[in-house]
Length: 439
Image 1 (tube, one colour):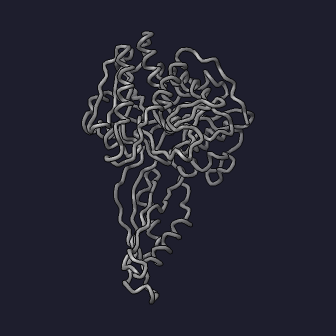
Image 2 (cartoon, helix red, strand yellow; image 1 turned 90 degrees about the vertical axis):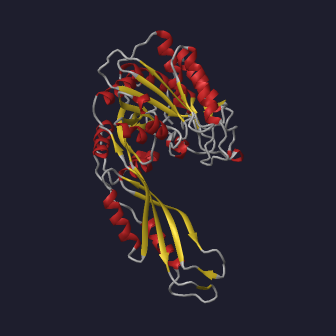
Image 3 (cartoon, one colour; image 1 turned 60 degrees about the vertical axis):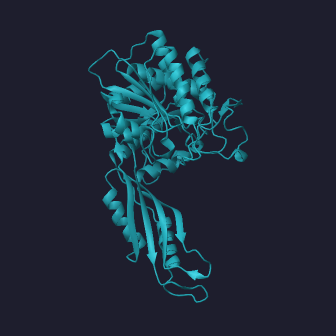
């Protein structure tokens, strides 16, 4: 385990930690079911609004449905010709089963230098950092280069329907002039040789769609097995999907990742063999190829009836520019006797992996970790950046966390005992403040 040398926290870091813990203690679980969600997101939004109001921000609280509130505030920059930067976090969290937790999921307790709680990395950590930085800039008279739009969204964990998506569709003026955005999922360190670190930045996100496979056959009594059993035919197709490995697609983002990480590590990296990346290999690999995961099976209703049809729902994640190729390949995998229906397509997004903002990220990291290297990658999941992209805003995932070499930040998302090193939060607060000031 590579130790991370701590830096003494200042008032900014201490306030950020205070806000992060306060937000974790607000149960803002998003079940995806209006009947069970409650008002946690609004309570969290009101907490953020009050803290911003205290230092003189003009805040906008938007609550399209009771309990589903978001907050937006803007800080003017010094360069009116520079596009605004949206710094955003979501205030909702995924459900918990408290019996699986060693520490209370909404207790925000600190043990052995780790902060535990739902949202510790996803993503009340960044919400607390942004809140502390926004207050410090306003209080201390810091004027960033470009306008900063601080946004705290509801409903990210259920697709942003009442959060970022709703604001983009109904209140786009709140993001007027914005050209770039920064949020999850990235920024945390992964090890390089010689105790050095790479900091991943998501410059692209895979597209999301749903495929439903349907097999049809003849209905029959369960006591008389048939060769035309829809359940068996569907099972073969699902097994074929599970065994299939889609090829690596050499996107611009992947090429840049291989180039930068290979140069930083001192050894070329092959996109078809990422094993030396350790626990982060699975995430990078998932972003390097199309993926299809069977998640829901539906067939029959009675044990003694062979049903006439059976279906499987697939979670499909699409590399930029690969939607048509994926459909053709999946059809070949399942065979001609399986029907495929497609729904809910959310396109992939891809921002430039080089440019001023990337340089600012690197300089901000270098100020805290002189040997740290910022490396772009393709996020295999989705964030609210997809919604902002509809306004022409290029999204980046970068919540900077310097963690020990054996600490898997990816593995903390949606897990029991979600936690983050407190020192990583202090590091992230300092780095993010530099980014927002200089971007």
